[in-house]
Length: 315
Image (cartoon, rainbow, N blue to C red):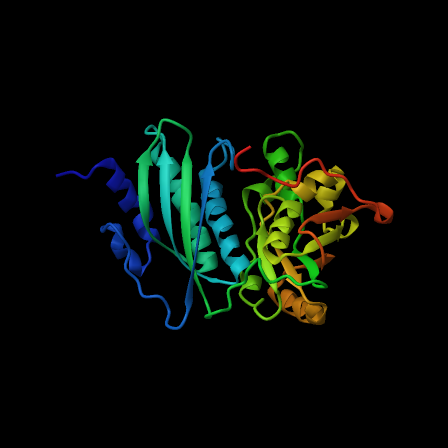
């Protein structure tokens, strides 16, 4: 009896990605034993063609972006990657070459980040490609980084550069001409190596996915503090600086950098571990007493007005 095409594709493209707990992808669920004495960290993200990536984006880069956005959530919690579950909903006419390229992209990042596929599901859809990934990681008990710990006087820090993702979407659409920015949109750099060593340094953390100002507001609300940042301190790549689109850089999202609250006494320690991980960190402001809101200061300390704080998933 011949196998249905769905199972042929699973065997051909995804079984080589499976870790030991996946049971060869022949059962309905994975079975694995977490490392002893570790807390589990679980996160999930979805991506839809035309919303989170372009319809004609290369499937290997789509796969890597899907995995990397989830790895960024683990990095923000200080977790070590363990495995992931994948759900694909694609039009019935999707060619086998698309699946081959998609799986090849996953294989590249599995090797880079030390993670394996545990299982998932495939379905057909009359609409655009819809992807969902659930990622599993572990931390030492009680050491997961949260949004709730920022204190008055802590510095606001970010990794890498801000704004490349939002500008990169414009580049990917052909609205601006910049290959560097387009690559930054299509292929985030999750800061896993740094996140796993931030316990005892960062008092609060999250990743910047929906816009720097909006995501900083999430930390403020969770921690019951205010924050003020200086726009001139926000690190921009040379490509982003040339575009002179500061407001978009501050609110556009898709950066997948870490946003941290760090007590001043630990600034030197943060710089030390970041340097060891090969990741730049920049202090851009401070957490303050007051109503949970974010103030952005421009030239000469004047408040910089922004039309919006960041990306909305429903509007």
